[in-house]
Length: 223
Image 1 (cartoon, rainbow, N blue to C red):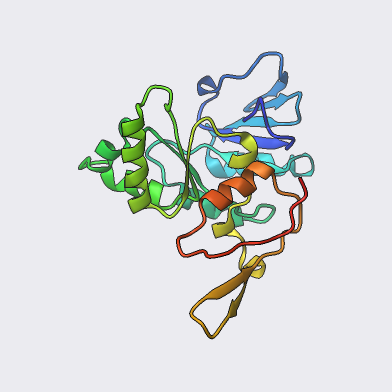
Image 2 (image 1 turned 30 degrees about the horizontal axis):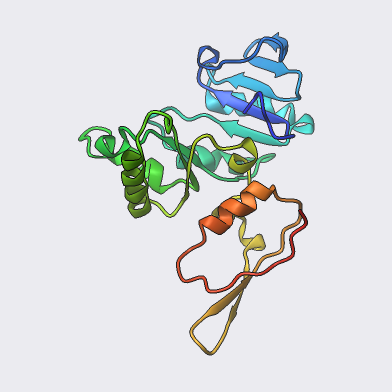
């Protein structure tokens, strides 16, 4: 994401710089727990605490479009997302990465099973990793389990950054909620107006993930 930010200036908050593979040619400067990249992105370590790191990022607000937070494998991304309501930030969505080779077994683990299920259930987008080593049967079984566990869109890696950072329709603020129009024959019309451009891949993802029962969709799209 730091190497291919899809035209956005992103701040990525991570637990440890040692876990991040950053091309040395992208690195512009280092100042304490902040790495500044030549493409306008920054990477921040949360070694001093999450709240403190957000304060640091707030100082870059005039030059950033997005903040992405990496949550530990046993963390609750929904709890972290609540911090996005602080002044200067606004919530967007939760993306959860799952390993199709192990996620179902981990969901049954007596110690971490509940955490795994809550992470997946609270996601807006689920990306299945390691699709290059899992066979088709494993991927299909995982997709079936995910369908029973979450209402999120489920995609197989690799997924373009533009899709990961695309609009999360489940998380739009109430004032941007779609307009519902009731009809006297057991169906509902939903109209949504978007304020800005949306990546084509994001539109295609939304169409593929449409809920059951959708009979017709129409709109104006510039490609």
